[in-house]
Each structure stands twice: as C-alpha cells, then as structure tokens.
Length: 220
Ligand SMILES: *Cc1c(COP(=O)(O)O)cnc(C)c1O
Image (cartoon, rainbow, N blue to C red; front, side):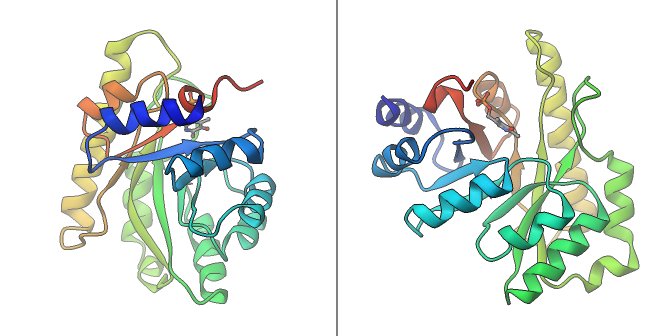
C-alpha cells in the first residue's frame, strides 16, 4: 500500500522536487515500508517522536522537522536533523546556531511565513524576516544556513485562495533571494504543498512538498 502510493508519487513528481514523507503519528513499521520502497526523506513534527524514530531506523534517512520547535528542545535534534522547516524568530535561529556549534556542524533551516487566512497558523511576515536578515548579529551565526522558505496554505476548499497564498510565498522567496541571498546557490528551497494541495503548489513553484496522509493514510 505505502509502496504503491510512493511509486505513484515518484512517477508524477518533477525530478527536481523533493518529496518529504510526513510520517508523524505513524508506527516505525510504516516508515520502514516507505524506506524499503526507496523513500529517504521523512518529516516529523514532535521532537521526542522524531528522536525515537531516528534511533530505530536506518541512518541514511534524512530527517526534516516540520513542526513548531521550542527553543529548549533544539538540543535533542541538533545532532542529526537535516532540515528545520519552521524557523520564525531570531531567538530560535540563535539557539539552533548554538546547538549546531556544540555538535560541530551547520544546520539547514527554512524561514516559515504566515500566508494563510487563519490565526492558528504560525509564521513571519516579510518585514519580520527582513529585520532578522538585516540584523548585525545575524552575520555571526556561522552554524545555521537559511536554505529557503516554508508556508502552509489555508485549510480551505477555495482553490483560488490557496493558489494566491502559494503565489505570495513564491514572491517572498524571490524577493529574499534577490535582496539577501543573490549569490547563494544553497538558498533554493520553497517548501509548500501537502496532500490536499501539492498539485497547486507545484504549479506555483514549489521545490519541496510535505505529504503525509496521501502516503500513509489518514491520521487519528
Ligand atoms: C501534517 C503536516 C503535513 C502533511 O499533511 P497531509 O495533509 O497529511 O499531507 C505537511 N506539513 C506540515 C507542516 C504538517 O504538520
């Protein structure tokens, strides 16, 4: 089942798009099935759960943290996380830098933007991101690398609204790229699109989709 879903997605997706298999709440056996089908990038949104799965599964897996990250938990992820999608404050960025330094590595992150029409979703405004990137102290953070942007569209049936929100994220990416990351090849990720809206996201320039229920089935 999981293998079939993945094969179908691999067939549909453009080569340059990264598929993050969102395995939150799912048992190890499901992740192992996905791994056996060739999947190497997994997304989790709880620190403890991600650490447990990391310990039990093959070390070739790339672990992406896609949830709301509390500063006091960064230390648990720092030894192994490959990409943190949801950075939305300078304080969190500083903590990630500090923990990355302790582990002698550079941690890749995405800035999360608020694009939805819902108060429950997290994220920066363009101005807030500008303030972080222009801050004198930002240059001192040698152990974090900002690789792009992430956003979640509204939970809605209105396809045009979702499309507009993704367009907003794409243009945010373009503006940041030309203003702050012009010469940096590594600033190249636009993480947008989930099971219900990844087709629209791909049409609007997504380079990374985060798909859970379409691979692993509904969550409780
Ligand atoms: C759960 C989650 C997803 C995947 O959602 P599906 O609708 O199951 O594909 C993607 N992104 C984030 C940030 C999530 O929390």
